[in-house]
Length: 289
Picture 1: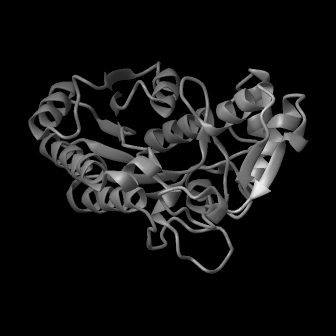
Picture 2: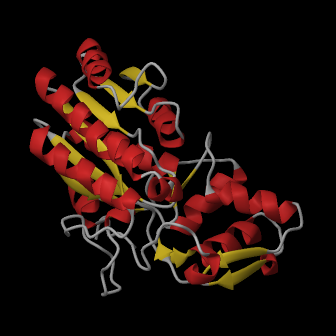
């Protein structure tokens, strides 16, 4: 089977290229592939003639999106429209990587199901929610796969930043009022490959199981690395004062994924331990209930 992967040089994109190495994979990356140029997108996808496009490319700088909404909407919403329209033109399916940031105002603190309607707080969340709407409207076959709090090889992420600052001896102030799912990119790549094998249209949440705060996530990373978790001090989102609002609770349920493929994601602590040990070992730890 032939796959085209947008953003193939990003953290998740690289994990996907590695996981799908037994297939024919076309890597689409900037600057040759620009989501803001409809003709370029059309030409690249038509030339690849893929069975499925996995669309990971995005403007993911949450605060940058808030400060430059025009760019965010151009890349994340309208750029995804270009990809979906190109898939429609050549009959390719589209698996769109979206985010927990499409949720934001939900008062009930139980894991969010994949079919729940989004209600974004930030420009980033709204731009990705716009991308989802275009995928649903234009792609001939689609999967929308939301993930969250990604870390992994080949990219900048929270775990790497926390460990670097801790090794420098810095005292870290990390928010303790945002709850979600720390998620290993390799595990997401494994899940995406399983969905592609089944060609199973629908909505999915691809995250490691269990939830914590960014504060809890940081302490776990330090503990597992043999560093002092007391270097991490809790603070509120208001105290941190970042430009873009973040969801207070965006823990995602993996129910639809588990029901489709028959296995669930492993717990986030197990995945984090594997990442920090360098062993990787993507996949599932248990079967479906």
